[in-house]
Image (cartoon, rainbow, N blue to C red):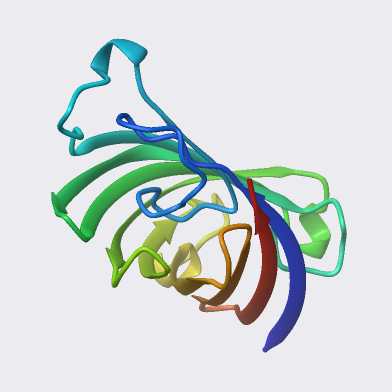
Length: 172
């Protein structure tokens, strides 16, 4: 089991306001929800595009992960999303290569300070023998300590590795 502590930044733009809260992005470390200024109305659209970037858990400082996708707000506090993921390789024999994959998940907002995110992702690999070789699951929770400081914990499971991350981040 791997444990890491990393800092990250967060930004969120919703279709009704440009606030610094991160309540409607699927899972954001460095995150932007993209919307058209023409859509600024009294009611908020349930449709969102998002992009999040974060350093990956690992021993190298130059490992990273970028997720881009679509989120749909089913209820006021539940979002369903699908996304694509691009990340640097965490396998020693593939160091420096780029991995691509898909993910799908649910984001539940308990309130404006606490959210829980779950995802299932697939990174197809030509060397994979079974589906469990390229399918993984991720569960994370985020608590906003102040308007500019949040705490995030992530449990990530893949057949070949599992990791626990605790991150302290600054939102702007």
